[in-house]
Image (tube, rainbow, N blue to C red; front, side, top):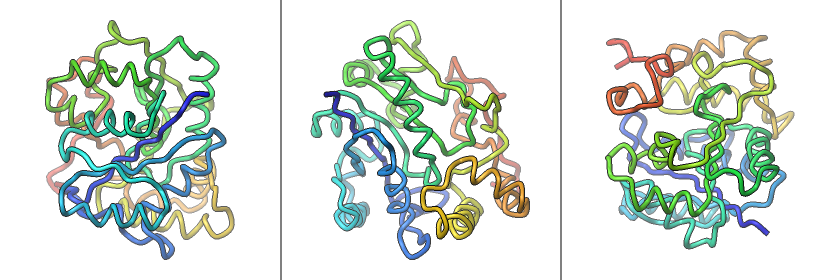
Length: 271
């Protein structure tokens, strides 16, 4: 049986919104709410919170213990090493990278990407839904075999490759067998809808989505969120100014497979 390990990278030292993963959502931390959603997938998987060995992240070890999931402590800045070492420690055949800034991630989307991987087992080293992305930002799923992540771990050297874990893989399609899963709805909301957290407005948006949907349906879907935003466009507007803003914007001169059309720059007002 294939051992699947979901690695949720988290840290307290976010530059734009420090401590964001412990912000409260309906009486629990944002991190716990996200883990709840990961636990809703139909596939069997071990969920690991991967944080740094920095003292400031001791509180995340405490939170992981409280939630009841394993916590791996590793490099603060080398997230590729953190994912690889966590995969080794927990006996992974397959590692799934899901960042902790995706508290609205739809477990059904994770299952969709896993379904494809298992239906084509042995055919791909890396299966994801981000290159190019089609779902609303914050539904990030990247699946890699241990052989794949080990190769990246041995060969990657650029700062962005170590910090963001997977760029060495998707930037080198000649070295890895890569598949990308697109939204079956045939839509592309990756640049227009933002379900991730990096700014105070994102937190306000996510908190309100939970308050609107969670009490009646704890496993609310991406479609449920989109329906909510259609009926209450004022919620969409809360963080719409940051839609399409991602880390690519600072590395377009270094990336071969990502163009300016896949990111937006911040205005002076937003900065």
